[in-house]
Length: 390
Ligand SMILES: [Zn+2]
Ligand SMILES: [Zn+2]
Ligand SMILES: [Zn+2]
Image (cartoon, rainbow, N blue to C red; front, top):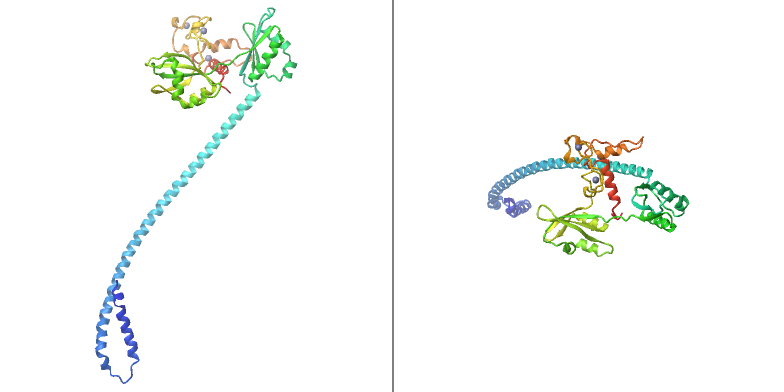
């Protein structure tokens, strides 16, 4: 509480006294008020001093407040600077984001352009052959596969083809007086099979069934018996169990074998849905661990003739040396060296049988390269022979 506030009432009463004092009768002697006026003098002196004290206090407070305000001003300046920095980094981030978005959009456009280009390519060529009907000669007068093909086409003529709306990608004469008919759908193959067999002529047709895809499960504990695999998988992997409740789903153990690290691996034949689910899951729980799942189908390459699709155990071809490409077993090669291995015997021999005008295959790669055109072709054929359900 200030001095002024404490003495405001006294000051007001003195003010009232002077108002009355000015209105007293003119004959009243000044002596009547002498004592009162002396008291006023004392009061007024201390009142002024008190107010000076108040003023000094107010001035001190004002100075303090000014310092405080200066402090606040400084803080405000710092905050403003920080805000400016934040705003700047926000702008930078926004610009970066905008740039990234543009980049993504550009990549998306390139991708869609590539997709369009590839779809144009596909539409220019015949659709990819995916389903096969095999035609076998049963008439002894048919001498070879070319005769089998012309016999077939004389019976199954263009009129029959168009009447039944059959789509054929390619007809390929193969050894054993047979012809492969590649169609874009299994329905086309079935129609051909029915038409040809209903003719009861010199050829018979059979739709080549696609194989079920296979899965490879690695690192299984050895004490899990083969006949317990499926139950253990279904009990420990709920997603798999749910899917297996549907009809037509299948998990069949093809084989299991001990690996070199104390566990074993297994190959399963599965339905397409199970195949996709397991590959998506990447791991399957079995026994005390999660085992890695991988694709179980791969291109087989013969170590004797170096061609694809069979193993050396069933190979009827002459051996081909991986080093010098002569007809001897690679281990017996007198010229064995890595440099020689950098050319491909499969592509070389394919080039010999390529007709004029066809671009030769490159040969400057190992016969075991995964980029070899013959390997890629073998991989494509393998994929075509498997029912992935799409
Ligand atoms: Zn072979
Ligand atoms: Zn050799
Ligand atoms: Zn090659």
